[in-house]
Length: 250
Ligand code: NAD
Image (cartoon, rainbow, N blue to C red; front, top):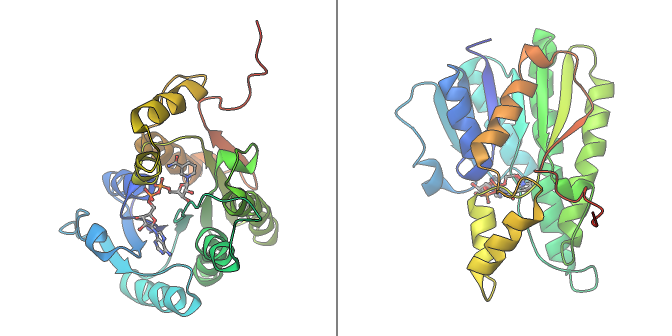
């Protein structure tokens, strides 16, 4: 199990950072990709099992060169975790073409690009796992998140395609969080008129009456990326505190 080489995108904060900590604790080698260089530098950079790369994962040349350099450094890629993502709040009529492209490129195209350049290394070893971090928004949605929910739903199609095209040696699984306590959530809440009230509303939305800590998402990803999940592929797993399943009434 240990000493696999694991790419994590959006690794500097939130769920990505929790994944970095999880896999380093498991004695794996982590290749951390993020656009935010200063946040990357705050990871455990003295750990010799951690290799950080500043990389905009929506940029094809950047992804190609970074993964090539990473493979030269560590030898091969065993696991890819497509986690980088951004949220923008708008309806279809409000969304500009540039905003639409930005959300699609960071949330969806990045997963295509990283898979495109990491899977050949997995094929050489005849073994590998791709985990796509989607969202509960692939199943249910809210107002004003049209590009985001579209990108996260498309990730489930990408997950199935990778699972079918590269079976039996390479598995691909999607993880769909509900509300997770990360900078993405905190920043969004801060933009509201009453952050405390909105935070409480987020708690109340979940059947579990709590907001998921990022390490619990990392635990699920860790399991799905392990050989213990060897019969799981092409599926989406919700880690969402039961968000949206309650019809209401008694
Ligand atoms: P976050 O904003 O806290 O962290 C995201 C990281 O991605 C940051 O370090 C950021 O610098 C990096 N990033 C952004 N654009 C990038 C780019 N172009 N190239 C490389 N790195 C880039 O977000 P999070 O909450 O940890 O979210 C991680 C993933 O989980 C995202 O895909 C998000 O959509 C998904 N998700 C989050 C929640 C939640 O409630 N936090 C819920 C469902 C799904």
